[in-house]
Image (tube, rainbow, N blue to C red; front, side):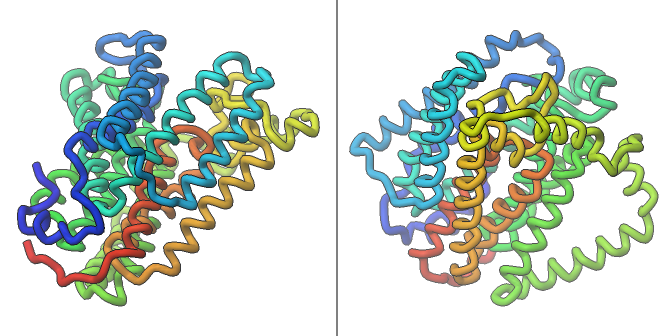
Length: 407
């Protein structure tokens, strides 16, 4: 299934460079595999954790080697986002070499290094932004397809009691928040591509409807809030230049208001997930308070303790900000704020366009998710999404507006 009609593909060859090679899709798919992680629910065919780690680690190495193959001259484009991310990598290495988090920290630094190096090599094709978005959507849609397949083959495994009946990855170990993240990303991007006439209504529905269904089955509140807020910001950014975006935004706002009135109790039940401690973010605050209260040396406050598995005393941190504070200290927090602020500032300066709208969706979704999900300080789907946003914003600086192509 193609996200671009032939006419769109021809019309979008007005680049300041060659079209992206087909192997770029393989590079991007391997990067996505690398960010899947190796921890999650039980799978239909048990996958030992060391095997899963070898697969994800090998994926990023393979992505780097393929990127070198298609970019042998190592042609790079300047990127403030990647420059700051490289500084964050340096800070991670400086904190990890002290071995406070064990040898695992060095392995995570190696993975982070190869991940960032591969992203630098991919900047060679930032001008072909539709190819990057297409590869991103296809790779994540393939991940969601495995979740759907697991749900069909073994519903009990895909919705285990240990996760309260929330859908998980039964083919590859994926947690409900990961399913929610991938579902929201696919939904937001394909809806915006449809609004910009870069995909057909049929393709949009075939991808977005199952993705929304998986998001709801995952019961991931952060993903739903991030999807709604990110799309709202993206649509507002297009409202001044696209009548279609204005109509969709108005209809969506009316539909949302009606849904709250008609199915308000059901929505409340969905959000509560049978839990009574929403005021403490389902127990997250206990971990956060313990992490902040732990004694630290001056060096630990400034540089952190090195890359970890994003846990504290055996419990998940579930916050990008506190995970970065734990691993890279105040230095890491300053760098994360810097690259997010840079992306927001560049987005504010770009003229309205589909590329800018997609970038805004990815940035705002990431910012919202960062409060209750970890991933801004290490190789993760969130950093991959932000890289795509940086590519879209760089495209906005060079491209000129073109008439919409009707499909």
